[in-house]
Amino acid sequence: MAPDARAGSLLDVRGLSKRFGGLQAVSDLSLAMAEGEMLGLIGPNGAGKTTVFNLVSGFLGPDKGEIRFGGRSIVGLKPHAICRQGLARTFQIVRPFPHLSVLDNVKVGALTRHANAREALEQARAVVARVGLAPKAAVAAGSLTLADRKRLEMARALATEPTLLLLDEVMAGLNATEIEAIVRLIAGINESGVSILLIEHNMRAVMALSHRIVVLSFGEKIAEGPPSAVASDARVIEAYLGEEYVHTAQA
Image 1 (cartoon, rainbow, N blue to C red):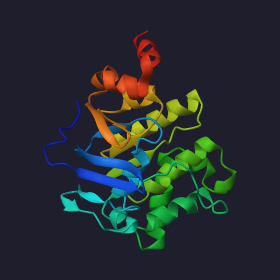
Image 2 (cartoon, rainbow, N blue to C red; image 1 turned 180 degrees about the vertical axis):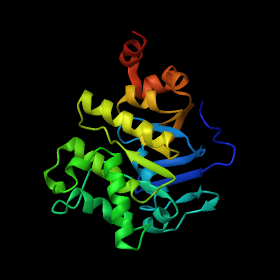
Image 3 (spheres, rainbow, N blue to C red; image 1 turned 45 degrees about the vertical axis):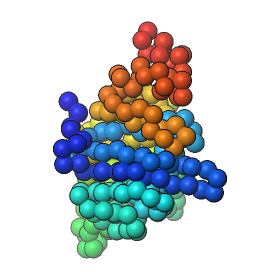
Image 4 (cartoon, rainbow, N blue to C red; image 1 turned 90 degrees about the vertical axis):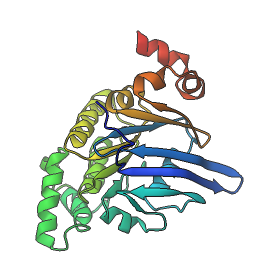
């Protein structure tokens, strides 16, 4: 059962807008997330999804609107300050420190919570094991496969001990077996109590994982609700999913 996002929201976004020159990237967006919820954010390329992530995580400032996390406004805060409050994110383009080991990459994230180097190292080891990279802890990050770099990206975010984790296309470029493993990992992270806001183009994965889904098109929210309702919404089918997806999903 999906948590009730309206009752004591962990994340509350209201009237969020962002323009880049003549492009309205996000327009009057409102959404809420409850503690423990997994919310999918989907839409065609250019819909404004990553811009939403950049606004929520402090990498961009909104033109207008409010973002509250844990009941407090985070508008105007720097990304590191938002991270220390318990909101972490991954990036579409994975850029680890290539010459550092997997463990040391994750330790960098852990240092945001643990000033003591030994405590940060212990936290990093636990997270590396959690994402299945323990056998490669001493390997240079630059030599990892794409699938393992995706795991490392998640590990670096998890090392900051978030209550809300924003995942930006962590399955992109992976094969079916790798996607299945990442889905299990994400589900396990959510089951441990971490709320997740997920951008993903693999519809089978996002429909299976999400408690609710928000759909963006040209920066505007066009649908919101349980996966089954969203998948059958005529506006979503026209703007994003297409009839082919619907027929395949029903087969």
